[in-house]
Each structure stands twice: as C-alpha cells, then as structure tokens.
Image (cartoon, rainbow, N blue to C red; front, side, top):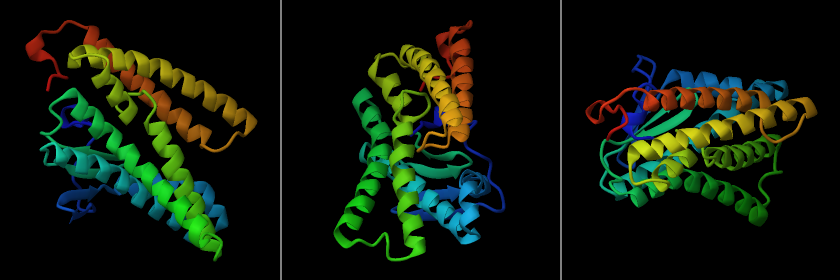
Length: 247
C-alpha cells in the first residue's frame, strides 16, 4: 500500500490497452506492462511449455490482485475511496483519503500481506484436506506457483524497505512526524536493500532457492537507489510548505 502522494511517478499513464473493471466497488486497472513483466519473471517456466508460463502469469495476476484488495478493503474501512492499479512490478492501492492515524496507516499497510498470506494458507490447507495439487500436471504447477508467489513475495513485501509495506510500517511506527518517519525509513531501507543484494549475490553463486536471485537483487538494488535519492532530497534545502512528502 502506498498513498497517492508517494506514488505519482509509479502509477503509469493510461493506454488504449489497459484492462479496466470494478470489483467489490473498487476501480481496477491493469497496465499492459504488468503482463509483460510477469511473463519475464516467470520466463523459466517456459521450459515446461507455453501453457505453464501462461499459468504463472495468471497466478501472479490473482495473487497481486488479492494483495491489493487487502489494502483496498482496509482503506475503505477507514473512510478511503481506493482504486487499484496493477503495474510493471506489482500493484498499488491508491486513496487520497483514509488512514488518518498512525495505527490506521499501519493496519492498511499490513492488510495486503495478510491477504496474500491468507491465500497461501487457503492453498496449503485445501491441498492438505482434498489433495488436489497432484491430480494433474497443471495442478502441480498451479500449487507450486501459488505457494511461491503468495509466501515469498509477501514475506519480501514485509521487509523494512520503503515504499514496500514493511517500509510503510516503519515510516509510521518510528515517529509521529511524517517527515522524520520517512527520513528514518529511508535509512533503514538502504541498509536492508544492501543486505538483500548481498544475499542475492551469494544465492546466485550457490544456486540457492526459493527466490530468483537475479530479479530480487536488481529490484532491491533499484529500491535502495530510490531510497537514497529520497534521503538526499529530504536532507536538502526545503521549507515545510515545499515538503513533497507532506500529506
């Protein structure tokens, strides 16, 4: 979950190829880049057949949407009017209102990972009860993809890296001041990103599983750089009225 003031540059412009509909009263838009990036991310599955790659993209779509719906429902619970946009590297739930207190904002941030991990629990629990995963070749792949995406992606999302959900929690938990909270959150984010990038380097060398070390390392490297730029901006000359991170 990211507030609109944090993600203006992350929300893509509309295109003639956007997929749009309403679900549970929320406007939902899928940018074409979402499908392309998800297909690239699941590129390894192409060795098992094109239909397996399509299955991965479908699982990623459902999983990211469930995650963002978690944010959106909590935003609406606190008076927001959210919309959901699925973009190149995931999705955002955006609302100009809702989440007025620190605790409300923290709960909104945690609602997305909670929804994703709940889906993970449903997948694992239903297979334990009904043993559906091994009924066919495609259900095996579906189970593996649902397991990996909803467990590992949501765990990564909880890392204290802004603007991921864990970074949002840090931002709101460490200080009553949004400026001070964001400044501390970017510092924690840079350290965390450095650790993750180092882990991914060794994971790539040693062929560790479960995460794709190349994709994860590049993503957290970019997030670390983004936080460095935000930190530099926060430390530069500014007046309160010009604060770009003021609500």
